[in-house]
Amino acid sequence: MTKELGWNLDNSYARLPKAFFTDQHPHPVQSPKLVIFNDALAASLGLNGEALKSEDGVEVFAGNRIPEGASPLAQAYAGHQFGYFNMLGDGRAVLLGEQMTPSGDRFDIQLKGPGRTPYSRGGDGRAALGPMLREYIISEAMHGLGIPTTRSLAVVTTGESVIRETALPGAILTRVAASHLRVGTFQYAANWGTTEDLQTLADYTLKRHFPDVEADENRYLSLLQEVVKRQARLISQWQLVGFIHGVMNTDNMTISGETIDYGPCAFMDVYDPATVFSSIDREGRYAYGNQPPIGGWNLARFAESLLSLLHDDQDQAVELAQEAISEFPKLYQHHWLSGMRTKLGLFTEEAEDQSLVEDLLGMMQKHRADYTNTFRALTFDKLEGMELFGTPEFSQWHERWQARLGRQDEPKASSSQLMRDSNPAVIPRNHRVEEALEAANNGDYSVMERLIDVLSRPFAHVPEQDDYCTLPALSNRPYRTFCGT
Image 1: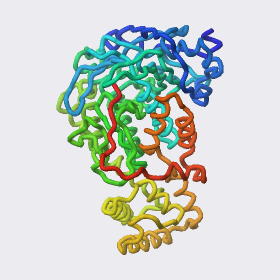
Image 2 (image 1 turned 180 degrees about the vertical axis):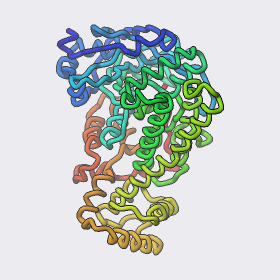
Image 3 (image 1 turned 90 degrees about the vertical axis):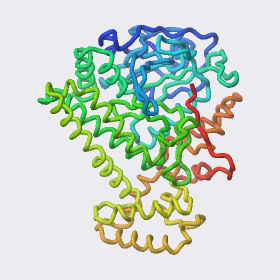
Image 4 (image 1 turned 60 degrees about the vertical axis):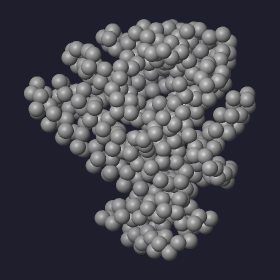
């Protein structure tokens, strides 16, 4: 049956030292039922989508059946959570194994919500339907936007309730990732493992994610530099679409450069760098405008975990680490400004571009303009319906922008196409996500399915998307998200 379903599993992580994981089978559930399945992702993984929707496939997604070749385990890691260092681990996740695709790529297959593990720390190891569907919606939206992300293969209900503030329907999500190696994995190795353990983990990471630098003279410095590059690009992509992760702890920062953990995440409507949605981020540590410096802070923690590998001399190791980390702000700024240029239809670079962008953002903040819809309006030159567009300062800025466009050789049509390709028509608007989740909790999945379909083509700019561009009704209560544990 495993071959019929398409599973082709390897277990390279299970060959690491035992300190990095605990063998752990999922806990069976009563009556699993498939809620949503990602046919396109399944095909790319070499899986038989139709067969996986059968009872045998659903039993795997529920953790009731272990596919041949799997070696289920819970990973150990640590992490700075809101700045405080803790021993952590997969408290409600089990890695089944690594699917080897027909093209030879390797992807983790992880069940999220299959019961307690040794790292659950008093939790029940289960998950509720709403948060699992939220992760499915947002991760697939991020994929549609072209942002590196873990993805969701399936969600099943368990036929059991989980108790949070109230009884909620239980669910399990199947998550697909380039790997689940985290900054926190290295912090765990550096604090509780041996130097040999740390080196083994680093060598494994290089082989899996950075084979091009595996033979470098100082391959561990190259590892640090490559992770810095990937995170600088990733966080710039978040900023360019107004995505707020919400819980940028070091255990939620992947070495592969993928976005992971869609708990309290949300997309910004009104542009404001201080925007926070997470109910537990009371001080705004992970606010939209703080994401780039927090990314740098997390990378500094990664560098600290590698010091014993960077150089035998502690002082020289610190110097190498600091030099590598110092590149992050420059790389981030380069990617962000390059992305902003494309959002404004600019192919060339000029010294005044940064002030052009910052002046626009400043006006957007002042007039509480919607981030996504402002750039959408500029893309199609439909400058109406927003307070911002009727101000003298915007008129002056618009003249500067048009003059800037006129100083490049590319025709206006090319600039317009660049903007259409860079400015999404739709994002997962918070009120739309909540609407879909409320319907799903009442047994109606059609609202969610339509939303996912629209979000899969964010740059299509077709009339069918118009309803998904509208803002929520005004409310005296700020929108809040929750971790979903």
